[in-house]
Image (cartoon, rainbow, N blue to C red):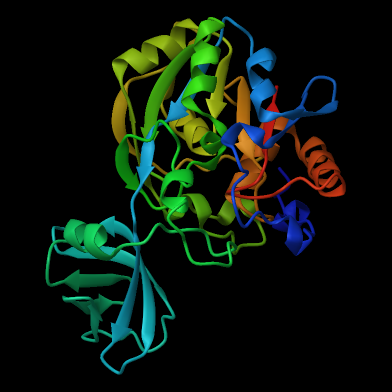
Amino acid sequence: MTSINIEDYDYELPRELIAQYPATKRTESRLMVVNRQTGTILHKKFADIVELLPSHGVLVLNETKVIPARLLCRKDTGGKVELLVVRKVDTHTADVLMKPKRGMNKGRKLTIGDVTAEVIDRQTVRFSVPVDDVIQSYGQIPLPPYIKRAPNEHDYERYQTVYARVPGSIAAPTAGLHFTKELLQKIEQKGIKIAKILLHVGIGTFTPIRTREVEKHRMHEEYFEISPSAANLINTYKPVIAVGTTTVRALESAAKKVANKWIVIPQKGYTDLFIYPGYNFKIVDMLVTNFHLPRTTLLLLVSAFAGRDLIMKAYNEAIKTRYRFYSYGDAMLIV
């Protein structure tokens, strides 16, 4: 089998199309509708999604909540360093992403407010108080690096889905940012079931692919949960409409063939499932997603779902018609 070259999943994006702020209202985002059977592309508003979803389906949401995981610290030399808390190792210790990494040697002392931290190694620090307390007292909402501004008060609401419930993500499941409670109510009134699952977005979701051959990339593990009640809805109603790539990965990670039929098995655990073109989807029938960065696992996942050529055609169309890209940008519905 021929290997997949990451360079085939690159594209040029004018910088001004990277959304720096969310739409005024969540449902005012644009919605590109991509049909896998016909190859057609339609342009809608996100609020139109109610009419576009089949009434007998199940909409699956990821109810993870973004934690204020970004910490602005000072080195003992006075220089600034930014930590992104990726994972709690124990009560006082966390795995982090450091920026810059230079000079962050073992034993280096950092301060943030009244808290001190010691560098254990280049990806781990130990705080003088519990990690959860540091985050709650001093943490900022971790806006992605392509949003070239400091977070404001508005972001603490808008960089969360309206159904976010379980704290644990270091990035928002952004396809869900377009939904309001009123829109979800309309979807339910149409007869569409809503199932809520969990996947905490970690560095696995946005770690860049550094290998030329896609197959050599390894995903970091991310924690997910699917309850028996959610699994029952997903296994009973069709089509299964996944909101976001994180939802897709959780559902496909829990797939099992029983009596010649693929179903979702309720479970809690970690997944390092890497979905790229050639993958055979077992559970997901439709996908709501945002527009993703080039050369990323997210772009590969949507290309696996809809085909590389159709996705690249859709992205070119989105650029031509001035869609807004990435976390605070517009959405795509793949049917």
